[in-house]
Length: 181
Image 1 (cartoon, rainbow, N blue to C red):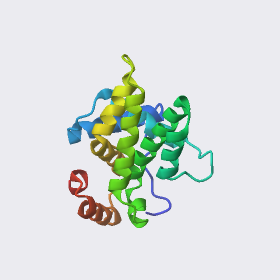
Image 2 (image 1 turned 180 degrees about the vertical axis):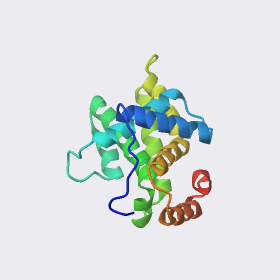
Image 3 (image 1 turned 180 degrees about the horizontal axis):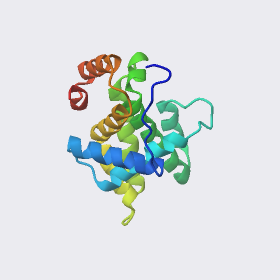
Image 4 (image 1 turned 90 degrees about the vertical axis):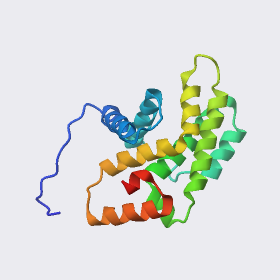
């Protein structure tokens, strides 16, 4: 791209609205079996990532997050289980190529993320606590939610030859219906 080429600028009130529109649209296109509460959660997660600064310098591994979640007090445990699920979701949805380069199994990330959300669902099982239901759905449909995040990521990238080759490689290694399309 030439240095003086004009890039389209998309005006948006805030990041949440920007991502909600894209996650909702991706859910409709994929006919993903997720509730609006889950669409909102994923949208909020993506918006938070746009503002997040890593407080510790380097992100902890999934194993470290799991260890912290399993050994913390109830309130801290909820936070750590959520971070584990969110980290695995973002890793698979937004940074799948990075995981492949590091030879980390997508199945490992999916298992850790779905397990973390399942634990959160059980911890927040009280009647009237809808977050328990959202985390249960995210656990049960982790692959579908990951595909939503991946499609939002793809929408934010330009379609060029490099992306097509990368998509083909992703489709070959994961069998993703989104990548195939």
